[in-house]
Image (cartoon, rainbow, N blue to C red):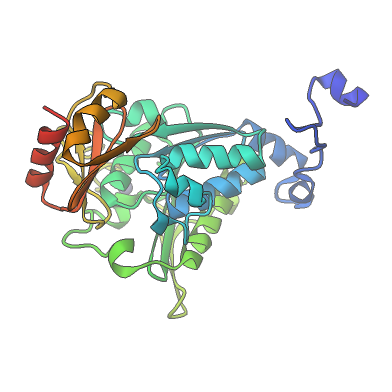
Length: 355
Ligand SMILES: [Zn+2]
């Protein structure tokens, strides 16, 4: 330990005893950040909702950039088909069906142990959004569905909390900064969530390059916000078609008069209690929130053994009963793969997990 670091009580070495004093030196050299900006990043608290393609990109970039505290929220577990674009995961994570939030936090700890990461294995709902997102400086959308985005928008507008929308599908990427009271919100630009059958990454495919493009833009806007360069924040809805070589930008620099959340202060998505079972990202699967009490995986394993194959670790229990695959989380939440029929999923849940 150097005399100076002893004096200020900070070790210049990481956990493995390597010197990491100049970890951020190249970023500090950039005039937009500087030492003052770097100090602000160290004190910043950012919540990332979703830890899939965009989530792992943006969490990885912000952790490497030195954002002091990240909360990573995700309801899902790692699968082999994620590895093409979800940059914080490896084959062992998919093998172990690790929850994405946990796998992401472990990977970040391996390359920047100075960052505090809170992994939350949860689905963001009207019931828990306040406890999950209160007290964070900035919310980054890295979800795969508009139900959650409109919920985040309601929460953010009601609480005057900035958030950044980002999405990618096929070769297409889109992003928008929402600063409540200053810029347009999601409902200003799109008053209604898109209806009908939406293309998803499971039906239209996705290029990892589109993900990394939009994740990089979202992370850069986050850095501007967190270091106090608010005048540099983009105030447009920006989209790219990387394969077709198109780029478009639509002004989103002020709230729309009469907007339901911004103008009329009506937060219908936040008030949405008793939401229906959710069909996940076109993946031929249904998510069920049936009960809110802990499940004993060892006991449940024994009970399911006669009905199919079953395995579990500390985070998930998986049960296969052809053609269905049931993934159960410790709070009783389940993802049932092999159907999009919510009634069937509910009955499978009742039969194997219980009412
Ligand atoms: Zn609005």
